[in-house]
Amino acid sequence: MVLKISIDQLLHQMDDKTKADFLSKMDRSNKGTVEDILNFPHYFDKYTPKKGTVNGPQLKNSRVYLSVYHFIQYEGLNPQDYNTEDFGLYLSKFTDDVIPCYYEDYDKKINKYVYSFIQEKKSKLSEFCHLNN
Image 1 (cartoon, rainbow, N blue to C red):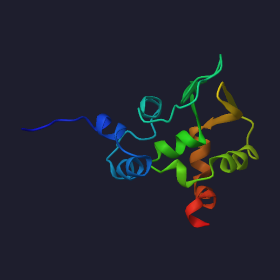
Image 2 (image 1 turned 90 degrees about the vertical axis):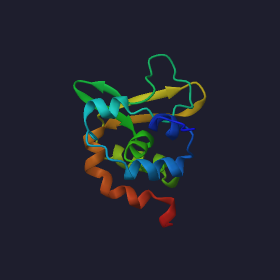
Image 3 (image 1 turned 90 degrees about the horizontal axis):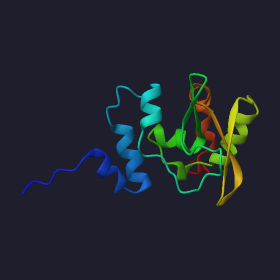
């Protein structure tokens, strides 16, 4: 008997570390496109957004905004390995072009940044990695 399973079904069954490893090795020829970022089905969505907050990446003025946590997931890295809050604070020193997000069951504001802006600052991400400390 042959069991067929989609990549999405497989990824939903993986822990964060295995999923990150798998995604980092996967051929994603459309990676970085607006459609791919917005339709990437593996973003963490544990918290309940308050009214007016969109959970996950969003398009505004033809630019894609996403949180640091979701950016790290999208890049095929494990967000648990990084201090996403401190990296977000670092990014905030360089821009105020953010979309703030508020959640019913999380007491801190989470900023979404323009994808291309985070890409520009990505080289600094390793400084916020727990594994390097």
